[in-house]
Length: 247
Ligand code: NDP
Image 1: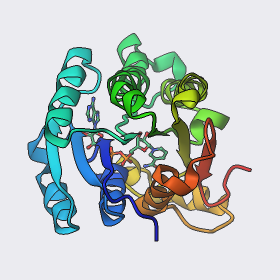
Image 2: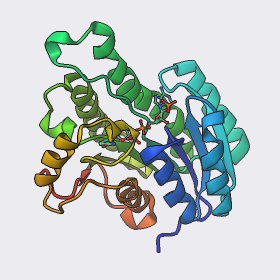
Image 3: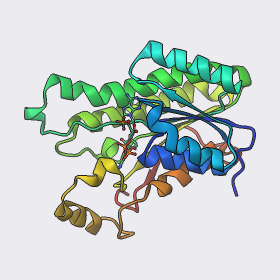
Image 4: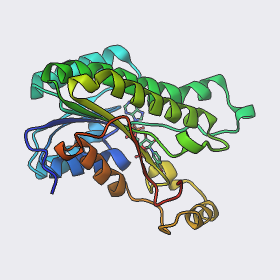
């Protein structure tokens, strides 16, 4: 059983889906939690769940694309928790369309949230981590960032960028005892994939050696491992949690 007692973990996009599951897994391992999503109201359900796990927890309504709001939120988190040991950059969006039909706004939206949002949070979290000379940053990318996907040029570019951010920051922060890794999930059953037609999910599942879509918990347990002391010699890596779909 992984132990995260005494650690403070920040999770973005914590209100639902994979972010909710990550928050439950980290709190089950003993971490105190600072939960971020677009509104504090949307986080009330998860707040109750992580508190029931024994965590000291706080909720923060913050749009991670807003640099000033992120700086203010991390100030609030440090005032309430005194430290940030773990950052999970999980919040993400899609704006799918074929490239020829993609508007400049829809091109930019996933890049702003998935990549610039992670940059904003990393910058805010890394200062206290540097002072502590330890930290764990885990970026939730996607297999699509490695292999591409028709209709997702914007999303794939944002996730490929996130993998580049992961490797560069792993090199920058390694000497301060901070590890930075990415997780690339395959197809996970959440609201994000709920609208896929049955025929599409059936076809996708045929290409997954483990024969099923992933669950948010599959991603969450990989995050808990990378956040642990036991993962202390792993940095700059992208761990695929995809049932073997890409290998
Ligand atoms: P969901 O859409 O279910 O949840 C995303 C959460 O992020 C929502 O609570 C959303 O808030 C929040 N959010 C969106 N934009 C912002 C923002 N600007 N600031 C703060 N919070 C924000 O997504 P998933 O749980 O499915 O995905 C989580 C991560 O995993 C994403 O990065 C996604 O790209 C990645 N991923 C998911 C896969 C899947 O198959 N589901 C596969 C591979 C990667 P609100 O509800 O208000 O919009």
